[in-house]
Image 1: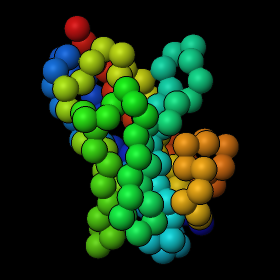
Image 2 (image 1 turned 60 degrees about the vertical axis):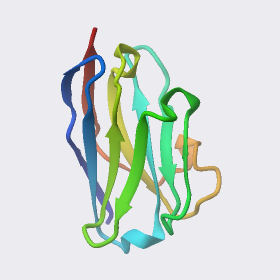
Image 3 (image 1 turned 60 degrees about the horizontal axis):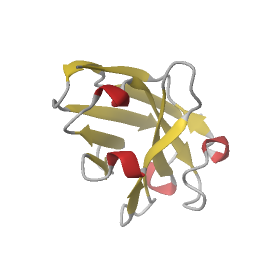
Length: 124
């Protein structure tokens, strides 16, 4: 059984930074494409970022490009989301997720495993 555990959320002022972590246990970490999603109250879950199984390619939703960076550490079985220049509209519960292929990485329904989520609140 694969388990994902997020950490690193919190309250930060606009312009500040946070780094989210997602520790993955279970099957080989390198076999999973990893994604970060977020969900604000009353809104659908939104793709934020993804990193390929090899770590060689990443992609982001346009609203976070240039501000957020996704990375993975195979030695620690952990994926990270570095968030800089945070804005109030980034406020949401952030989830990490894992899937067995790199295809269609922005589609949440195709991810097999999810973490419990971590709250990020950005004050203005």
